[in-house]
Length: 432
Ligand SMILES: [Zn+2]
View (cartoon, protein in one colour):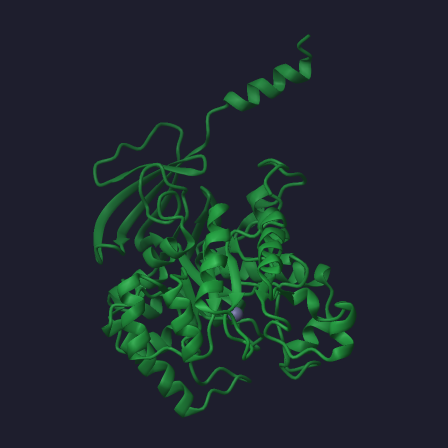
């Protein structure tokens, strides 16, 4: 029997998707490193239907005029922690204490706020690499995907897997019951524990696996990392390794890990090996001069030289920040964009900075066939900035327009997210 409600539901599913047309005065193709002028982008529902110079505006389409702007694909932050914000007060920027002070629930709310701030700055994809209490990262991703709230596409790791203690030095009291601090790391020393930890993360919504390669002297060997890579691959996931020693870097590279986080332990030799094997570098290159987060001139110089060396060796580079703290006066998105300075100081041309922030970001996130490039059939994620970012990369700090999944999130420099807020899982509750 077909109820009246059934008829309505059926009618809703066949309703045509709304059409939006964007008139782009300039359109950046970051892959080619060039600007096309006077382009038209037709968006149907969540996806791009057509792009080109000679495209007809379909009847009934809403037209958005960006003829004075440069339209470009959304930005990617390849290493952040949206459900973590350590602060000068009360924890003196020591994130051990953040974990003790703040519940998973509070941190999930912070993640929503940080996600909005990232999207407002043009980041349409964020890889969220752990340290998010008890799966606040998964909750954030589900909240966005199910349609409760706006936010970037989240590629999240769940809880970081490491040998006993993870990145921490827990006290014996903490280690005994695993109640305090332990939600931040999964202890996995034996192969059984490693396998269980990977499966736990996948079960609880991870889309990438993050490991501590060498946080302790007993870090993982190349053989163990190969085992981790193979187990994650069974479920279609890649592995990112936190690396802080040259030995750890060589083990991760030998094992063919997908990506290496942090650059302090990488040198000319390991860069050459990474380039050979096509291993992504998520270097997290902190600039100096961030209020409250001093980086010594020597440390900054090493970071700049390291990035320059990686670029010269043609290592696949991604834009990544690890910015998981509060800098007063800056949103999370604005804070991340400050990291452009390190890339400029490393002498990397704007076209390649833009590739790292877009094309390479889609590749490390494995969305390059569906989300990122402004092409027919792809999800409609795009942003607009004044001026030409190939000439002036700083214009990325002045994002005026953001579209995510075909909906306008920001227009004329102001967030307009109403269309994203829903009182139910409009995209489906089964999205896990
Ligand atoms: Zn990190």
